[in-house]
Image (cartoon, rainbow, N blue to C red; front, side):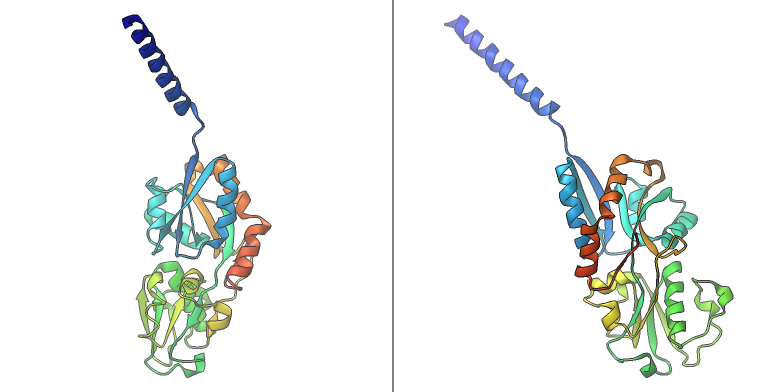
Length: 270
């Protein structure tokens, strides 16, 4: 009986080791974390579904502010991010020393001037307050939107992203309230108008074409610094899995979602 017990124990141990070996040798699903800003990310659904079939799990990591995803990517907390345009990324690289690189283009998200207090730019009056994003690039874009609406004047020499100090004429003596871009929709009850980025406008239930009282006009093309991108760490820019994600983003399935779900708020850039 003792001999039989030893044999059974040996068989049980062998079966346990064999089962453990199977588990360890089973192919593991690759996880890719992509940082995004805001809650509306419907265009990623078909990409996530297809990658799952290929043994890749894509996880969207949502942030509420623009200042966070590049730091998270630089620090290795993310594998990719998809929230910014070329101009914003280049400014972050130049000012913060990030080692990041664009690996694919996604969409255009125009800035708009919105208001809950007036129905047109003509109704904005003296000393009114206007909220604008406080980061260098989007603040400059916002001022150009306000200028094209006829409210201020800025010399062409100031370039596409001027500063408040570049304003040469402000006949209504408008007051500009600088806040983090994500806060611009929340200030609508407190200001005459607010310049809001496309993504934050969508999150706030606003449609640029329908609800803005002035809208930035953008077009595609490689020279447009405001085309949004997918970014990776520079060392990973040729990663085959990341290139596959860009390839899946550039499909008709994603384009259809962008055109239908956002009702013109975004323009595809490929």
